[in-house]
Amino acid sequence: MRAGRERTTDHIPYVGRLHPAARHVWVAAGFGAWGMSNGVMAGRLLAALVTGDMPAWADLYDPRRIHPVVEAGSFVKANIAWLAASSPTGYVLPRTPTRRPTWHRALAR
Image 1 (cartoon, rainbow, N blue to C red):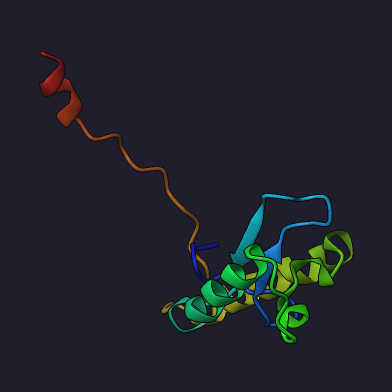
Image 2: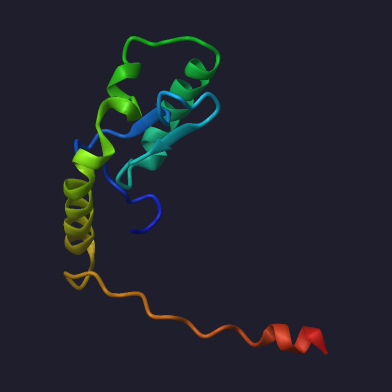
């Protein structure tokens, strides 16, 4: 997946504590290429949650709302289908390994 294009299975981003035992691990992900507009919401929500405030709408974005094992299959299928549909060629191209740049050799001399 490309960074910033991942989607959640319910198309609502994950914003909040990563899991119930996480005291200092927060997440804001799954924007499905809507990070610029949803980033403001995520920042405001994270700021409120970190300071102990619980907005009424915070549960909507809670990453703990779904079970990762149950959702894993549909998550992968949805993201592959979305990437294939958004690719200009209509399918996802495999990543080819790139050659390592040679400029570092000149610096080592």
